[in-house]
Length: 95
Image (cartoon, rainbow, N blue to C red):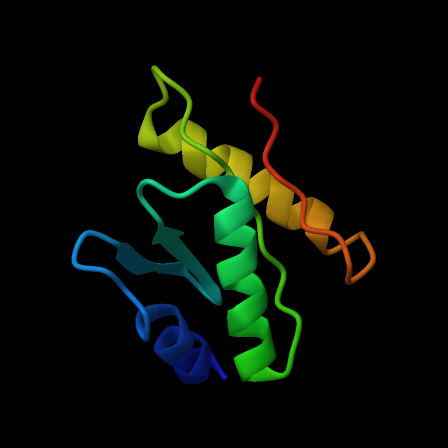
């Protein structure tokens, strides 16, 4: 399953996107220049290809963010995803 997810995540990469496995069964994907709504749409396409809903956390870059800040917000959003109905796509808080 991890290989299938990785193939879906890398299948439509632009030259400036990035996908990295961050440990265990977690991946990080950057989508520069895309809104959270656009990223959510791409996630939905990946879910359809896999025929399975994956826990996901979306977070948008905020001015002054460090990489750790962005990953932390996305991680917290992913944890909330696991607790919510399949129709929900939590976005990391911008605190």
